[in-house]
Image (cartoon, rainbow, N blue to C red; front, side):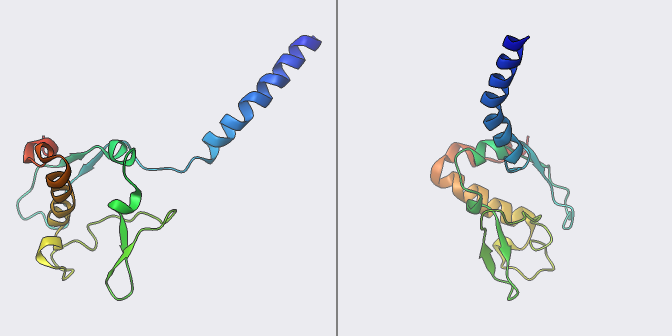
Length: 130
């Protein structure tokens, strides 16, 4: 009985740091995200499949995410900031420049520009819009 108690205690002490780390891990969002415009659906586009987990593994959140200040200007993302949806600001009525005026335009500006620079073969429509 004493051996069982000693082994159980030792096991608990060894596992506790791992379990604590898992419990404290920050939610980084889903591994896969389907992106589709809901505010400006003039022509219903095919949804884009975005491998969020694969991008997080090699990029910082601030590479893509940001917020908007009281003056309407882009404010860089800071660690721990709540991630808001893109479309409430990136829509035809928000008064953004043309390349950011819709969710589709903003996503294409961000995603395609990055892929054209880093992996041109991934900048084709069918890669995201399956």
